[in-house]
Length: 102
Image (cartoon, rainbow, N blue to C red):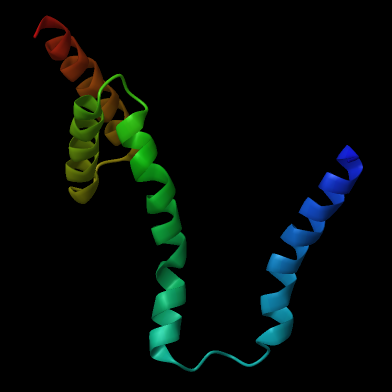
């Protein structure tokens, strides 16, 4: 098949996903449950994409888990994004060095 056909199908799919909710749901959503559910959908999707990548992007799952624990603790304490990222990277480096010697 032609690459242009693939691009056309992909463009139509992306367009329909964004336009259909606007055309179907014209009235404001009144349900508190549905509003709450829709509010958390982006966070859940981001978490579902990020957590497996964190655990599998290093040489061992242990160092990825250590980085995840460090990131969660620092983020919970309200540290900035750069501090969380650098500390998680340092945790991976330290754990990988420890695992190399074991």
